[in-house]
Length: 397
Image (cartoon, rainbow, N blue to C red; front, side):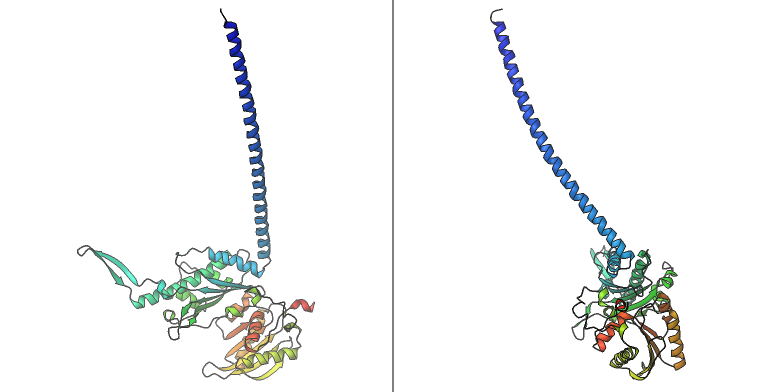
C-alpha cells in the first residue's frame, strides 16, 4: 500500500530490460548460427562438387579403360590381367611377381611368372612336444619329399595361373596363353644372378577348357598339354622357353620411344620378294644355319631349305616365311608339316610378318614345328642380324 506501485513498475522495467537484452543476445546468437550454417553448407556443397567430380572422372576412366580393353588395346589388356593376377590369393610371403604382354594380331597373352625357390617347401615335416623332457623336437623332411613337393608346386602354380587368366577373360580377347615360369636366383658355380626357366607352356582356350582341373594330376596334366618342364626343378635345371618374353614386340611390353628412329627402320611389308628373301637368308645364316637352297613362293613368301650343323640336335630344316598383313591360316601350318615330312626334315619353321590363330598353335603342338610371328621376327632380326626393322601395314594404304 505504501510505495508498492512504484516498486512494481521498477520490476516491470527491469524485466523488460532483461527481456530486451535476451532478445538481442538471441538475435546475435542466431545470426552467428546462420553465418556458421552458411559456411558449413558452402563447404558441404564444395565437398559434394569435388566428390562428384572425382566420381565422374573415376567412372570416365573406367569407361575409357573398358572401351580400350574391349578394343583389344595391348596396354589395357595387360593392365586388366595384371589386376587379375594381383588379386589372386596366396600366402603373405609367397612371391607374386610377373610380366605380361599381349599380341593382338595372334590374340596371344605371354606371361613370365617368377616362381618361388626351393625353400618355399618347409624343411621340417613336423614339430612334436615331448612331455617327459618338456621340450619340442622336430623331424626333418626328406630331401626327396622336398624335391617332389617343389615339382608339384611348380606344376600347380602353372595350371592355376593359366586357369585364372582364361577364366577372367569374359571378352574372349585371348585365344592362346604362353606361360614361362622362371626363378630369380644365384648360380652357385659363378655367383652370378640367373633366371632359369623351369616350365614353359603354350596352350589354347579350347584345349585348356576341356580339362577338369579338380581331378587332374598337375604334372601329368602339364605333360598332356605338351609343356616343357625341368627334369630337375629343385636343381634349377632350365628348359628352353616356348617364346622368350623379350622376343615380344617392345610396343606391347615397355614404354619406349620408337619415333626417334622410325624413318631409319625398314618396313618389312614394303620389301620386295627378293629383299625379303635376302633378309630371311641372312637372319638364319646369322643364327647358325647353313642355307643351301631358296626359292620364292607364289604367296610372296620365301621357302628355304637349310641345315643345322649341330650333332644330334641338327639336321635338315624347312623354313617358310610369309610376308602377310593378315593372320596366317592353319592350312599354311599343315602345308609346312607336309613339306617337313616330304623333305625328311627334322624341323619346320614358319615365319610371318603377321600372327597365328589358336588353331595354328593347336595343330603345331607336339610336332617338330616352330611358329614365329611378326613381333618375334623383329626381335630375331635385331638380336642376330643387327637389323632394326618394323612392320607397319598403314604405310601400304
